[in-house]
Image 1 (cartoon, rainbow, N blue to C red):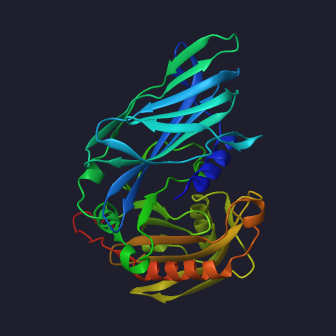
Image 2 (image 1 turned 90 degrees about the vertical axis):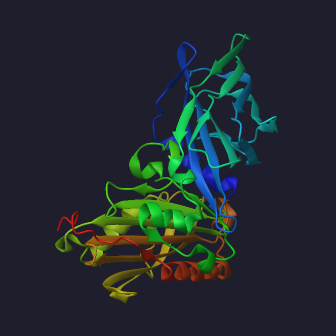
Length: 377
């Protein structure tokens, strides 16, 4: 997953929703949203973290000669650092000077205006599977409007990594253990080694996500959800899986109700909508599930000149064995970023993505085993 995809999602998110301040020094000069995406390499079964630490200038004044310093703990190293992570709603992306020395990340910009943000994008390798990790607060050095050098340090952030360190194996085994859902990624998409957990887009829930982004098992094995993605814009796949324990009479019936629910999960991936023309909705047997809803069609990005559009495939079904309704939504993006690339069709790439989505769907498996003592229906 390259930087361009992440940056565009951050730009849209931060311009739509208010930022809650985090105290720096004696006044709330900066706000920070630290997000760490759990990433699995299917081939090597290694686990890494992708950082997306968003820092916003909410001081009401501009600063100059600004440096951001992020120190990483022992056992954590920077595998890759991404570019183009400074911007505003008005100016879009800008570049910063970036470097890593002695396991310390630095970024610097000549000016840092009010309501401007900086995003620290790094992929972090872990020397071992840690049970807990603490990221020291980002240190910010700058010159204030009066020409005086200043320094601020944001809060530390500690996170529990037990569910990642406690699993031996790759992403398929991880999902099977914590979500009771599995896909055979190696078989279905052999050219894709890396899959990253992604949060629900802020545009869908009204707030910017923070913390470790991974799987979200519910209060019991019958409820949960997750979103994973692989690849850069132009060669990207996303999977959203939501499962809920319900009474049979509560399951989705009718095309309108089906598309309403799927639209909710489509919005988890961004400001996307269904393309009405050519949308195919059918119902029949799929795998071992009767009356499965199958949806094939396209999605479109409602933000002009960003991603354009792509292909989608979904399966929605109820399993009476465990009294669970499943929503499985897959999105493919075969176009590039920006005004020209997002408007340029790429049928060959999309055909490849459709084939991969079809293969993934065929390897879907629910590993929920109903237990008599906790069946509620």
